[in-house]
Length: 475
Image (tube, rainbow, N blue to C red; front, top):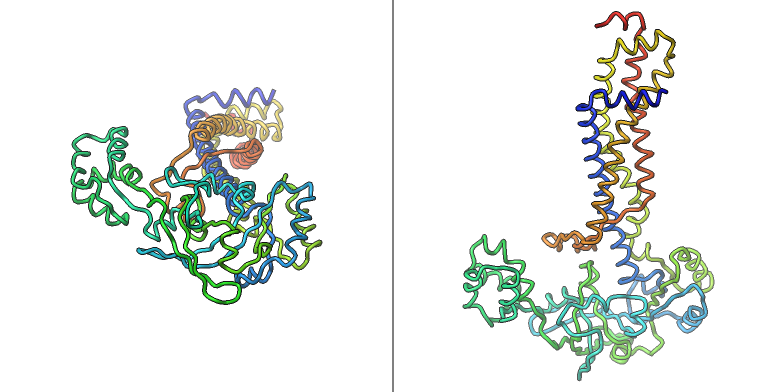
């Protein structure tokens, strides 16, 4: 009976109740969507850390972690790989040699790490090959006179391999994007002119386009006019294993781009068979083994097993190798509930105010209920249920709408390309696909009930302080 009365009391003043429900709904939608957005970003960052950058587990020489010299290879490489081949927990593994070096072209230079890999085997633990930019070559598939190197777009920019030129294909692309014909005609004086840096290209565009045209069509022009100098040659200088300075010229076979600028800026990939002779490394002198497991649940146990079996090697999991992603994985759930807690805390003041108004309007009625025998506990329960119904109705609607919004944007993605450089500097993708787990909604429901109960205390105390005889006298 009390439950039925409480639900009917919620709708006695429909306008006031609807305002509170709408406020709770909008707050819940915002909180759920922000949580979904952050969850999508975190999941993408963790996926990139594991399947692009480091794998589940990495084995290295502990001295190599302190001083990345070519001499510090894994001492028992053959024993480790034999154990990995026979383990049922291991999905795939890839061995890599690593040399710190300086890359140089005629127009630029950059310091980075040359990673000597076995391309086909590395494909099994890293999807770096899938990040190949269109029309930039291939992943060690093309043949060339010089040893091939797979570099990042960031390295290409630093070495001035990325150029800009307005060609017929650029004009056609702009037309398909509905750029006005008169705006395109202004570019005639720049067609087929090569610009070796983006800055010089932007300066030239400012001379023919006004600020409004640049703001509207500039990003499209930059993306369609950019191209990478095909088959560019890069000379790498590095310290060989015997301490002497070595040189090796490589030819760019392809250009990749991930969502992590720091990783891109530091990594270039070559074949181990090409790097080993140049650095005077033996075939089995390997600096790291990247391991992918069949199940993420086995990471901690398998890491402990490897550490026990090979104590002279350094064994680290992905959370240690990518601490930013590890921290987000461990604490992000707590952040979600903090966000929802802040939103509901703010809404609680509106709920308290609404319930106080409802109590003041029904003083005589509450006094009559107590006069005919309803005890104070039942009065408190009635007011508490009214608050819970009011809050829970709005939050349930908000969770449904928020879930639908996440489902839609999770399929289409949200593009933050206008601030992509800032996001990618922290390893976050500029295109995010929001996602949320069912357990999150269960936690929100529990939080809503707790907030509603706490919000009902002040109005309930106001009602319980009344004396039935005084309440009945009030008009």
